[in-house]
Amino acid sequence: MSPRSSLSAQDRITRARSRLLLDQPWFGSLSLRLQIQEAPELTETMSTDGSRLVFNGGYVAERTDTELIALVAHEVLHCALLHPYRVGARDLKLWNLACDYAINPMLTRQGFRLPAGMASDPQYAGLSAETIYARLARDG
Image (cartoon, one colour):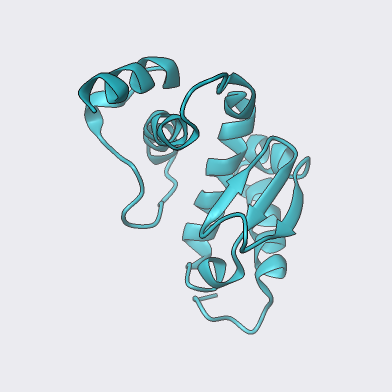
């Protein structure tokens, strides 16, 4: 299926989770623990607070199925790595960027194809989100 499908954004996310269950069972089973919630007032893309997968319907509509599967896996990794619970007193935007730099190389190595423009820099591959955050904060 291509972007701008006749399916609703929520249905497309449900299908992406089903595909993950078949192709990447670890990611798929963890994705089922997240409540799917459309909330364009909370995100321009997709995000998680550890219990919900929050999405902007317009953003989902513009993603291919392959990208959507990767995005669900991306949000699952935030949860699996406890990113929502490790933020502490850090700047939330910078923390999320650091977490993305930590997560995205893992997904790429697993064969996922993320949408263009997602945070990716080989210098951060294999580093913890805390280490990446410290470097980003230092380098301003």
